[in-house]
Image 1 (cartoon, rainbow, N blue to C red):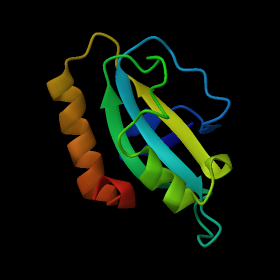
Image 2 (tube, rainbow, N blue to C red):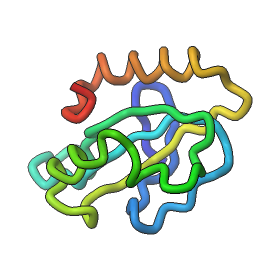
Image 3 (cartoon, rainbow, N blue to C red):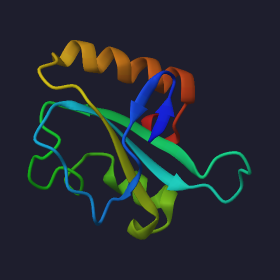
Length: 109
């Protein structure tokens, strides 16, 4: 598990191997952070979805190209999720807003 603020996300998985659950939730795109001694991963994007398992969700995302630029390759992209079944979009968006404001991920700019 990995925490952002008080939210417990799943263990980061390679974006290539990720099998999404058919649920609403928040996701974070991460890269391995070799510069930091205290963290293994660095969040580069927070987002939300009504259905994390939508076909092509990752590669068709409007920020996918910026994730690749930041990571330098798809092999360095990881994803973790915070499941929020039966949640409304406004609630998920408010949590994403808070996480973006707190962590300042480069691809949410």
